[in-house]
Image (cartoon, rainbow, N blue to C red; front, side):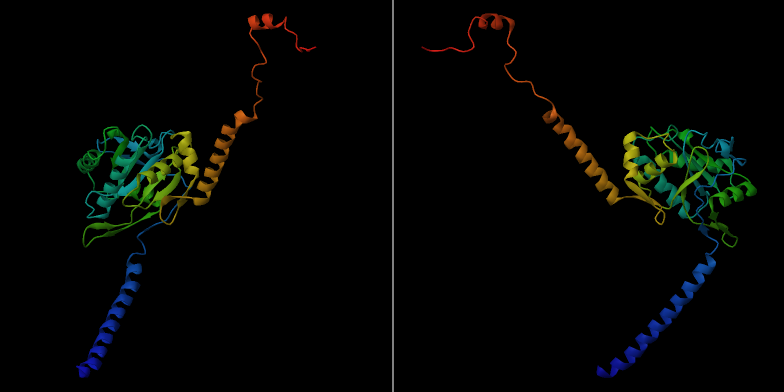
Length: 292
């Protein structure tokens, strides 16, 4: 058995060396192949308002109409024949919207999904919309989510405006792309990027409230949002421990002061004011009786 130890050791080292060499090649090749597949965040930039797309009903929708100056909206870039990532993103987004409370699609915000494939048809867009709208609760209006398609030039311009970099793989007839849901203010300014696949409802909610610039959500929502911070690396919101502690301490002080108010108010002495009848009866009684 001891004679096999040395040969087995060299064989194992050789396998590890080959494996590390393969891994090294992969690490150098993958970034080169994917260098044009990324999302460059352009927060603060405005979407080009002069672009027009067609929705699932064949109706034209200009980018200037997306928010109508009143509602924030979510923007996604997908295509109907995507083999995986688009399906995962839209499924996750739909589940997140379905679990979100208070804010309603169509009433408080909108969603626009634009296809990056210029060969898309109205029928395919209608089929995609039907699939995802069917997954939403009834309080969400179907009119609040539009699936759009357009020409190659319009697609390229909207993709460039939001920093969505993708490539076309002619050999497999597919688009290589990343994934993000982009939050936009009512006047068309890019607010945040959400890079989640399984969208948390609170992340969508906070993002929409922030993008609305005070137009949607309650005062309690605004206060709660101030206790969270946006993590640009993860594209999501997380609780800020310091802000939560400060808010909790402030609330404790306010409640304590509220309960202590009665103790600071001047008290009326008990029995100092007699009834009129009793006062008339006691007026004949001397205040001091002297015994002799």
